[in-house]
Image (tube, rainbow, N blue to C red):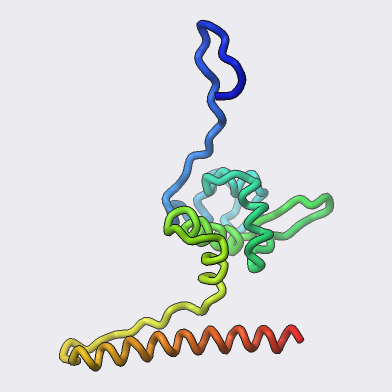
Amino acid sequence: MIGPVEPGTAPRKRASVAKQAPGAAPAHAFQDGKDPHALRTIGEVARALGLRQHVLRYWEEQFPMLRPLTRAGGRRYYRPEDIALLRRIDGLVHHQGYTIRGARLALMEPKAVAVEFSPDASEPEMAIVTAMAALRAHLDAIRVRLSRALGDS
């Protein structure tokens, strides 16, 4: 409740933002008549994702890959790829239980390598294939970090 309640009146509640399931509505699900590839304001994106505007601003500080366009006066405009990234961040942080740091690291890592097993492979062979796939993903992540570090020098 906010403030005192007068007798005979219903208590006021804070305005809440309805949460959506992760990935519930794609970027083109905005019902405003704009082109699906149109730029969106922070208010439009916050409403569509069921988040508060200050959360989006905070995520811009915490996730270096999230950089909406800014115009004079600091007004933010989100592209469809920014909205897709926000949906991924929301899914990781609010639905999968990642911390901000963990979500940032997960988004910076290359995608996991899909491994297919043959039905007649033995258990030790599958364990080796799984370990090699994990090693490859780890080495790819190291390569990406090294190339970023060397490129930033």
